Image 1: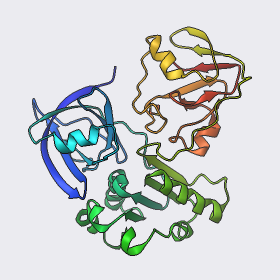
Image 2: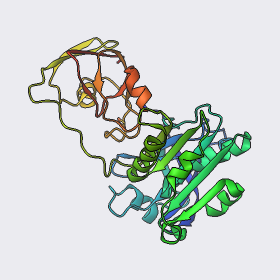
Image 3: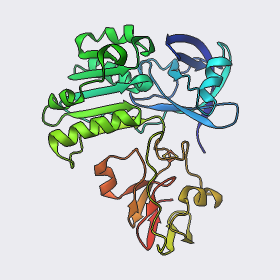
Image 4: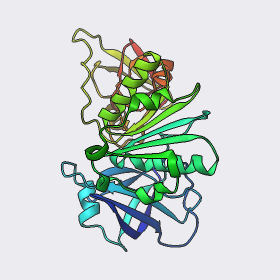
Length: 322
Ligand code: FES
């Protein structure tokens, strides 16, 4: 069962064109909220009963509230429009506990790259690295200066933050970002797919294609080319859910998450498109074609976990830790 709690909107602040931050705190008492680490997100329930994920962008040492930032997405599913147009200070919102699918790994240096509202988890990383005295550089790009949230707060980090408004400065020089990465350094990216692909291309051209230097979080699959379905002559396979004791014959393109949920087996899930990491499930045996945008190349190659909302088996028998 997903842990949920109702919080009250304490503050709403205009941060940039189309971006507001929302601060949520407890209703019934002042007990600390569950702790979180930079990069964590919460799921916010919107009136249609579905959830939207928002990175926490406050100070993780302050557990009196959770702060999120919301970009109004005109072509979105309505969650951001609800928050911008209808939600008001004093209203209540149901949220989940913080979840962590984007987290800092140990490294001697961090190149942080944010596009647009992708700054929210990246800012939490930057402030955490600043507090712990670890080296980093943040490259923050946006369409215009007015569309870039948290400029004054990030200004406190001094020359470790580069602000690049596309209409004034052009696109970030990602080759330069990659070139400055010392041995063992990692690149953290949050923003649209085009930004991630540009960073990956810069890494590939500087270091070769098999490097595992990039950690990322995307907000949507917009722009992701759908992968080919398994070959039509693909054999049905056996799906084994080890803990719940189910064994099924499955079509190769059947959605595993939907099948598992229909059996009454509980699995956390949100996006159902391989970008949030909620449905991560351990693989006990078998191999899969990873179609998510969460796991790193190294994690995908390890073949010990998968996103069951989107990935597909490439074996005759897939045994999962469910
Ligand atoms: S539900 Fe989001 S990755 Fe599977």
